Length: 292
Image (cartoon, helix red, strand yellow):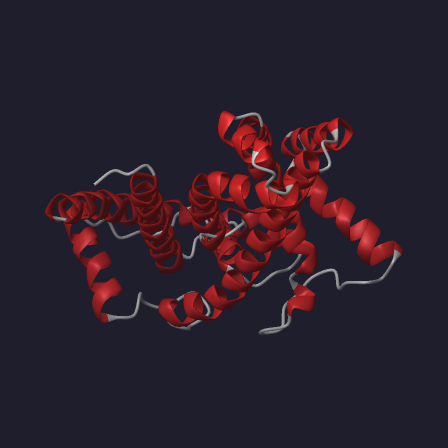
């Protein structure tokens, strides 16, 4: 436990230095925003790294992250965006994981080589296709042609608005999860343990739906925890395409407009969140493998 605390403190120190440096770097580069206005000389205030670093922590701890360029506090801004991103992440995880488990187990249950090849082919196809193309294809099919779902936006708690971006992100989860599940499930189905259960007249549905499922579930949960951390950190491309007011869109906006307070705090938020969930995944792996 003590080593884990020190590990986190070292990580926090490094992350805060990077966040402070990046925000200061963007402050200096902000002069380029005025190039089109014919301004050739911009007055910038040069600060030492230490003074900038301490000011960064003061803003985080005492000033709610400071103010965005729009005048709202950074923490308030992130708080409102987090709820929509959390909703999107939950939908994406459920869609991708349930579809992957359903099709992978079905291929084994029905002993269907055709379904196995289809899941494998579709997974490789999805992972080799840029995510913005998947998003555009879904918009063309389900908004432009069928008019089933809105092209973007979000209303708090309304899943109707997260279906298309959720399927876009969930398709990647489905693909990665399927490529893990397919060979693992096949290996378990061919194991001596399963053969023993069959000789004792256990139903095939019980073997696939319980015994094999429980065997592959632990590692799958770890993969989902890691994916969840990535989704909660924001998905810039997807959120921008679907006009989705989440963390990813805020991160994109902060980079584009060089909103230094928002950018620095979002870097800290994303880094800490991703670190924590990765460590949770690490301890889950040790737990399931019987480690201490």
